[in-house]
Length: 267
Image 1 (cartoon, one colour):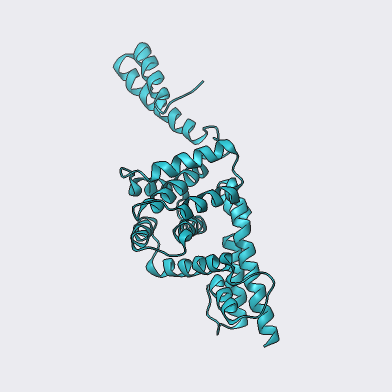
Image 2 (cartoon, helix red, strand yellow):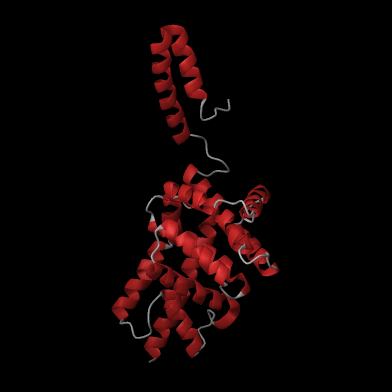
């Protein structure tokens, strides 16, 4: 049976009216409302996701679409990036259609960004690691063509305001994503060849300066690994489809830490 958000109220009101008149109607509405709220919390998962995971998945692709369209047109690089993210998630055909639908909806000039972000915040609460992961995905989308446009920056500023991300927090995450993007584009790799630019990128991926002490370096590395731990993120509400992406982010962090550690031992 497919219950809507008003089924309990309707049934409760009808039964209450027939059994107890106006007072019964009022009592039935109260009971029915309680039923609707309970049912909403226990609603069967869609595509194997819980309610908060569904919202995370939906808003992720909605905002990606809005970002891609923010400078007036969706570039081929941005389309490729969206497909790449879907590939990273290992989406099946049905899930890809769902994601593409949200992406297209986000491109609409009538898209209400603030409303969707507020829904997202209600779903994830103050789970900082989930909010950070969400922003990292959006930044990777913005850097699809290699640069962060002024329009994209303005939109991301609005996202940060709604999500409660300070300018300092944004710059920290931004620097790390930009460095990871440079890594992906081939400026440094897992062969650990000696290069000043590669080492600089590795430090940026870890979010620390090159003169940081070994103790602080390890602390930053462990904090990032904990924040991006796939199992922890899924338990907090990250859609399971995004677990593969989270794993790849931890691999980037591990690669960067190994790169820096090896360079320090040589030095």
